[in-house]
Image (cartoon, rainbow, N blue to C red; front, top):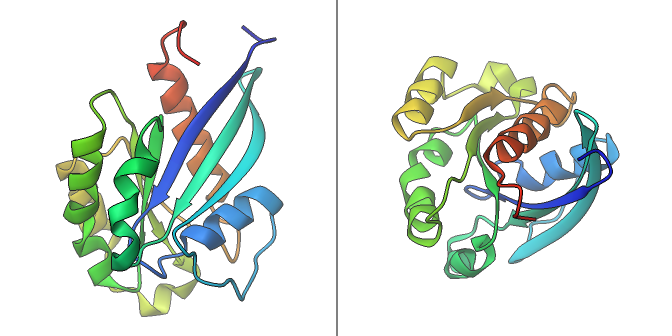
Length: 178
């Protein structure tokens, strides 16, 4: 299996300005970019990773959070193997909308689809509106497969998010799928 290369489509979704694009940029480049323009519709990026001596290409689909683009989400989520629901720890409303996002996921995905809840912007802890405990309770009640808080600015837990999601996808993977 070490010589085989898997390709996994993953989607990042959540409300606008939660840090989805910044998270993806940090993961891809290991740099923090202060000024990132709003995603219009969708951004698509690729990154090769090696997990447990398995070569994997991640297709990262960063979906715009604006309501006006939400109608596109169902068609872009199809074929994805896992997802990251991202909220902003300094904005309670970004976690409160989780049901809107999961309704779309549940309508479009009829197979095992790991989702990690990610609370972004931990570098702004002094502005925190969503307690870790409350966010974990919500994640557990929604059947999330993981929960991580991170900072794209400092890099805290960024790689851990994608590593965990990729390991969950590998665990679910049937040998004949690719």
